[in-house]
Amino acid sequence: MAVNQEAIKEHIRGILEALGDDPDREGLKDTPERVARMYAEVFEGMNYTNDEIAAMFSKSFDVPVNSTGDMVVVKDIEVFSYCEHHLALMYDMKVAVAYIPKGRVIGLSKIARIADMAAKRLQLQERIGTDIAEIISKAAGSPDVAVYIEGCHSCMTARGIKKNASKTVTTTFRGRFETEQELKNRLLLMLK
Picture 1 (cartoon, rainbow, N blue to C red):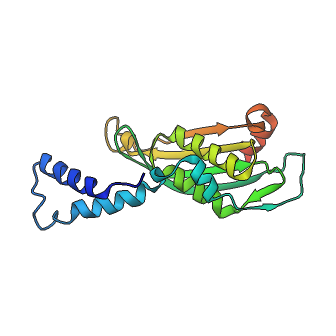
Picture 2: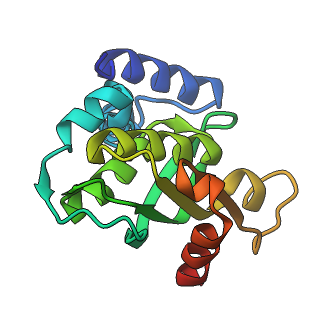
Picture 3: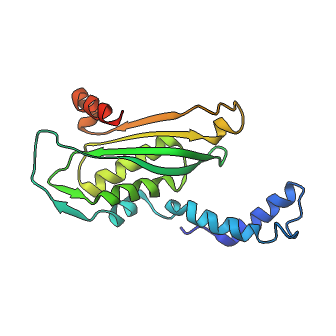
């Protein structure tokens, strides 16, 4: 389902009126259209299921099979998202993704694209990790996936409790990363 920009324009106009402002004044008259275009961009991931994203970014390459636990790790992938509870920005988010190849690897840029697309939804940080892990597992053909995310939430920093230095860290472990403590520890040491 595509983002309905016409409906967004109409509702943003209503929000401006509800805030007590005039949506027809000079500084605001193009705001509903700008916001609609912005939402289409920042919520692009809402147009696709996890299966569709996995299919979009599943181009892979043969690699020698190694049973010792060799892993692919891409870290410091910068993403942002919007909290589904307050529509507040989740920012300064860094994602690390690791997986153990099963005879094939996906392109490194695909990992960053998957992280970006999973974040471009109304989200919870915990679900972003779960979505990335599911998509990577399908795209790479490996059940052994880990996702580590650290980020700031404006629903904590700009409103409510207003704790500017707070960061939220979430982890998602699947397959061997979930069952083998030594593998999990090795990964966490790499991420420090």
